[in-house]
Length: 107
Image (cartoon, rainbow, N blue to C red; front, side):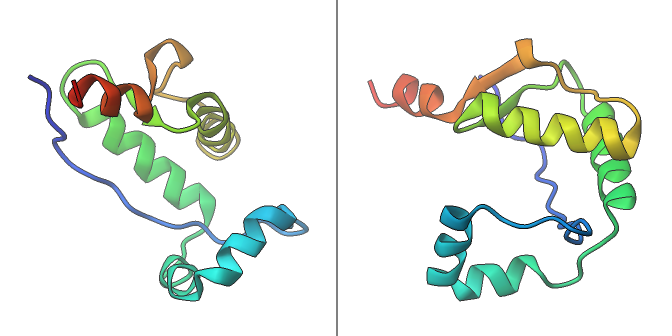
């Protein structure tokens, strides 16, 4: 049985000139406490992504990226890793939709 060994949580500053999608920003508007929590102690993306890559690389075994929707979230994280770290320890072939884990455990 696999288990989560650790959870990394860090938030990057918003990129200059970037704007959130209107639907996403509407969600944040309805969840102000969540927005406030993820905007505390923000770090430059260079620092955040280098630390994230080091954390993933230090984990034992082959890393698995779990998200939903997996492909979209993977591409977001992958772009940040490539842009601010220069490489990625994650691979699309090691991506699992979180809904698949939920379904597998609910039978």
